[in-house]
Amino acid sequence: MSGLCLFVVFMAMLLLGAPISFSLGLGTMAACTVGGYSLSSLPLLITNGASSYTLVAIPYFVLLGNLMNTAGITDRIFDWAEAAVGHIKGGLAHANVLASVVFAGVSGTSTADAAGLGMVEINAMTKKGYPVDFTTAITMASAVLGPIIPPSVTLLIYATLSSTSVAKLFMAGMVPGLLVALILCVTSYILYVTGKVKMPAPVRFSLQRFVKATKRGVFALLCPLILLYFMSSGIVTPTEAGIIGVVYSLAIGLCYRSLSWKVLLDALKMTVESCTLIMFLIGMGSTTSWFLTAERIPSLITDILLGLTENKYLILLLINVILLVLGMFMDGTSIQLIMVPILLPIIDLLGVSRITFGVMVTINILIGTITPPFGVSLFIMTNIAKIPFERVVKSSVPFYIPLILALLAITYIPAFTLWLPNLLY
Image (cartoon, rainbow, N blue to C red; front, side, top):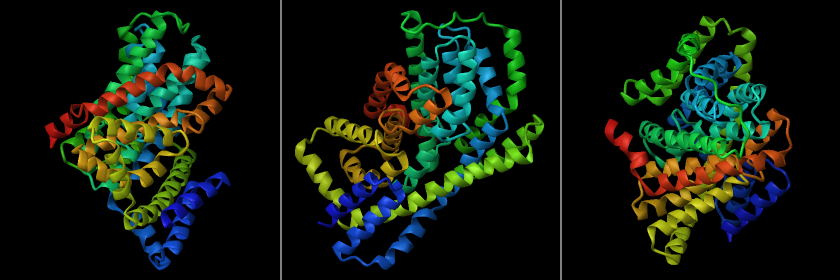
């Protein structure tokens, strides 16, 4: 009865337009009241939930991405990517994806990629004759690489919820991230060759231009490599890597003479706003997770799913469908806070690695960010490209199937996620 009360109050608050964090908090308070639990323990649960050492890394990686955006460093990354792969059929679409791969190595969020690098990519591609619809679609699709390739705020939150090694999770995202990038490039190539999208002919490769772009952006390009090396070798923890990244980005900004007090204050302001929302949501979500565990909801759902079928692959498929559908309506952090505590017992019973499941959850969430009706990246790209919501959705259709195929491959082939962590640790 109290579990039903939580669901009803939560959905009612969402329908009234309340933020998800408040909806979770009020829903949990109502459910605790109905279930006879004391409300006095909730403040402590909120504090404990948001004070995990693992979460300390979040502000640093968010600030790192914001500094890269506001200091104009993303321009240099895209120029280098264009010089490197702009000669391949599909031209700047491949440069778009490659730039997102590099930026993912310093950002950790898809919204930072879409909002910062996305503006640079859309302007550059439309100026050179690429259809604005396609340009918007590939930019939005490539933005999903941000939380897959380390560092990743999404994986940091999952690590806290699942008591999983952050370093192993970060390394587990590398191969899947590169797989998704490859699939996006292949899709763009096919769209060009088949004539489904009218793109300009690719320019000839110029070694002189490539060398010039590399020299111009070498310090920005080294940042993700330095962070990956330090984390994979165990020299620093992910939190310490985030601090190093921030200091390095400040040094780059000074070196490029693109850093000013205004740029720094803007980056800090955006970081405070983002992290405040994230940490408040995590705190509220921790009370919901505690209540669900106290009411044995995870065990109940485990029994229901295993009662439907004992086939491991069907259950994993069903979990993917549930997460994808939720991703169409909710933000990723909320989905993790609600679903990870519920699904972990099932994953453990199936013998699936928590590391593999973490990457699987992340990709589901990211596909949700570009899926109507409420995908956050859809609204960001609509605002940047200045085109109707419907056109953004229509132009994104060719990328949904490849992304789902990548999700299924990562779900059913554990080597994609476990090979690199097992090799390094």
